[in-house]
Length: 291
Image (cartoon, rainbow, N blue to C red; front, side):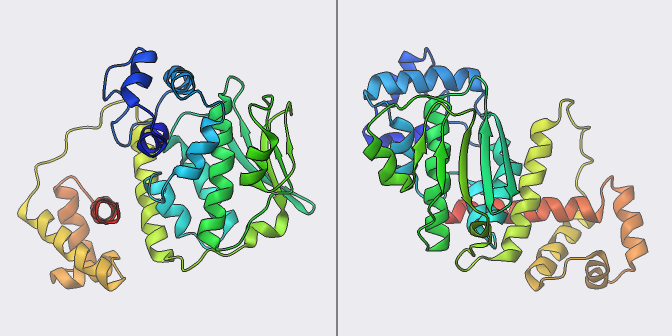
């Protein structure tokens, strides 16, 4: 939960926040587990009471270091443009939190990044909007300025506090939460993206999303064999070379692609499954080093 990451910088006592939400210490610290909106409501309400700051969402948006959003930050930073980063964020936002429905649309000369959460939290809406604009500026090196910022809730602090972050007109009591940009802003390039890394991260994020949505427990995996371990080793080498397709892996193993497929089937796995698993392991190692 982003509140947990930002609390030390804001001087926010987490123990008091959790007590106020009737939660035990460490209840929200499990990495990779999205927080249900029902639980988040109690936590945010408690945090605002403890901090005495109605603009806590905006303060957190200003405080978050790159990497706090885990894989979503690295996916965004390595996207080719602002629009591409928004699209990926929308797709994988459920990995971060259960906070409503996100969408991106373009109509005429305008683009709209919209957040719909009928029973949403004002602090979360302001955090999302502020974080989106500030991340766009950080990753692009340009002063990305919305045409308009709209919130469903009423203003919670001074107009100057909102203007300081968004540098744009801010409306309250709107039909939905949204950021409106010039359409061409979607094409703003990000600085030095690693598109290959982005592709690998996207595969890992998709795997995590599938695991999150899976209701039934997966069948037990077959015990690893020496052959499967050899394939994993070959895959790591081929990924480093930039060509981990089945023909290249088979060539490295000294067998035909058909034989490799058959032997992997006999072990209850496949080239595709092992490639995804190996990439995920490499990315997890990268994230551990980067953070």
